[in-house]
Structures are given as C-alpha cells and as structure tokens.
Amino acid sequence: MVVGFIIAAYLGINKLVTKQGALAAFHTLKTTIGGAILLGLEILVAADLVRTVTSKPSLEDAFILGLIVVIRTILSMSIQIEIEGVLPWKRALLTSGASVIAHQINEDGSRKEKNKSSKVGR
Figure (tube, rainbow, N blue to C red):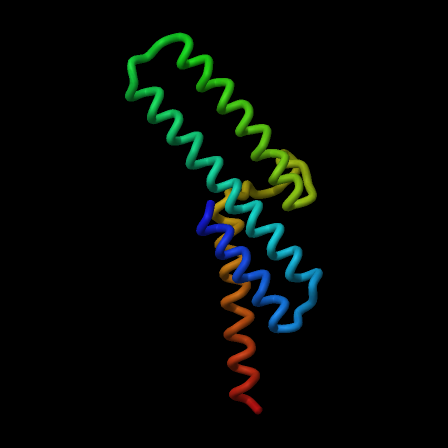
C-alpha cells in the first residue's frame, strides 16, 4: 500500500506540474490511492487465508476469518463504488486494485509519449 501511495503522489503531482489542472490531479490521486487500498485489501485477505489454513484449524479461527473476509469485502465494494461511481454489479468488467493502478500508470506513460512526439514535431 505504501508503494501505491507513493505512485499516487507522483502521478498527482505530475498532473499538477504539467498544468492539466487540479481536478485531473485530484481524480488521478483518488483513483490511484483507491486502487492501492483495494490491492492491499486483496493481499491481506489472501494472507489471512494462508495463515488460517497453515495454522491449527479451529472453528473459532474459521469464524474470525469469515468475519474478516466479510468486512474487507464490504470495504472493497465501497472503495470501488467511490472510485468508479457505479455499483460493482452494474459494471461490464471487474476491476481489481492492481488494474486500477496499472491504468493510471499507462495513462501517465501514454501522455508522456504524446508530449515527446509533439515536441519532436515542432
């Protein structure tokens, strides 16, 4: 998650420096931080599953794991709704936290390539 926050800060500042506007910087920052949190939640759920399976199994551990998964799923859904502005079951494609971050990085890279080609043409 920390790396995701650093990437988000870089992309947001980059939008401000290139004078794309504060609104574009805010949208990039919000989307990238949300994606980093989503990715972190997915990793933490996987880590809890591995920890529960590899430890001495008990009914109490299974109940706690189920509760953790439900809470993290609700958090993930609410973050996705905030990022995309649409309910998850109304989306055409599922979006994971990693794909949100990758999209922002690709968008930033394609913008840089566009700027390079416009400078060469001058």
